[in-house]
Length: 296
Image 1 (tube, rainbow, N blue to C red):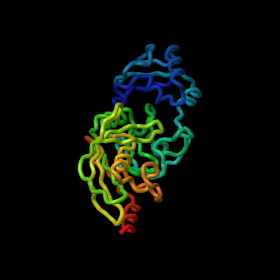
Image 2: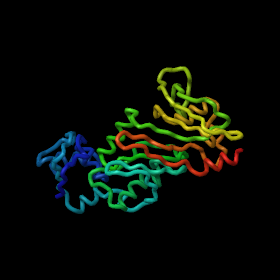
Image 3: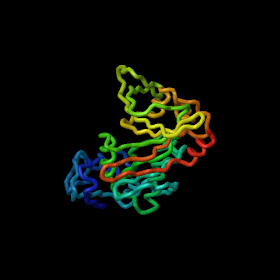
Image 4: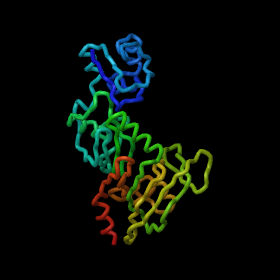
């Protein structure tokens, strides 16, 4: 029998979600079956799985050691690539650098990604919680570099999710744009996701479109390009890439919305301002400066 005392970090989490973190290799159907059979109890009583947990609640799992190990072993425990640059970390959240070319989350084929590296890092440093499976809170496109945030605990994950949803986190990017990009200030447009998963931008709203708000600050020009600081006021799919392409100055090296002929796509998530945490930064990669200097 295994017994767990719910901490403040898991307050208001549903029991079924809490159990899915404790038993990541078990299906939800199996978990509900164990609840019905009272092989899993809450405060010594039969539970449905929909209960909202409170600090001090007692969860008991009446499995054999072998069965518990089978369903509780997290994938990161088996090893993995823990090579990740940590930009900020506290008890509940972590911010890391994602290099261009690395997926934020694995696709259907599995494989290396930022989320897997965070799990491997936490596991190898003895920071992997028993009652929660850490996961990233924001995703960057494969060819975009910069800051990725993750919740280490349920409390941290909920905090980041709420802050992103309410737009309390200020996100700043840097990009290099094709041509001399002179537009400065707030740009409001309408965002539409196409059937092929690309994005269309329009200055006129059509049915189903959502508003996208972006703020541009051109900082430096070279012969054929502009270094632009960008603040996102909404978090739409491909918002920066599609908006700049619509304005006639696609992100340099963008294979989807631009010419895509460069070695890199020059888009970098530079900083996030998080309430109660402060500003986290990830310096712009050196190849941005080398590119601008070569284009004098």
